[in-house]
Image 1 (cartoon, rainbow, N blue to C red):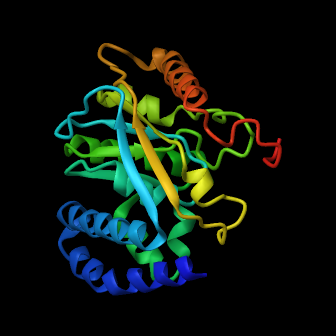
Image 2 (cartoon, rainbow, N blue to C red):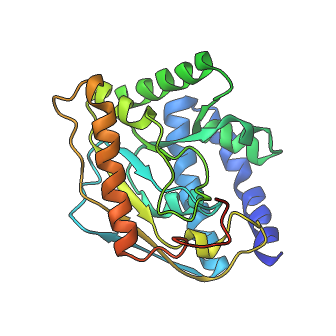
Length: 246
């Protein structure tokens, strides 16, 4: 309850600045909103007693543009994205139904590229929005699993979208692992918040140079295998958890 109440309090404190930023347009205003969100994440990590570290298996160039992909297993993933990814400009792909939440929904609509999976037409429109963002030199952040992994396996099956977008825009993929969000805030209960460590691991860049849409499945499987192998190597705590849905 302590964590939840302070989450609301800090969000309301920063909300007027989000409203002001929204008047600067989708690009400039969105960039300002992400700076505000990063400040929000910095504050909340201290309040929640979560110690975050970014680990780099290979050097990372923050000035380059990427399609970031991450493993999705907790409500804590969003604030951790704000701590883990400190690119100058980036956007997160998010579910459209989150925009219905009062107050938070306004921030959400102005900060993310929303995906509506209710029809093929709406999914295609979301893909076009992401491509437009990338063409403006902005990185994108996508959870290729689409929703929480509740399988007890390192990952659930990936959708094609992130990999098709990477190929069609010739933007390299940078996988990032979130190792501790499952332990900090379990998807089974929003009141399961616990203090402790948080680690984001940057894996090697996956190039898409010269690939075509015929290579989407190959690329998807390559990234999946890499992330799965590393989650096992880092002993991700949810692997084999019998409490997860099968």
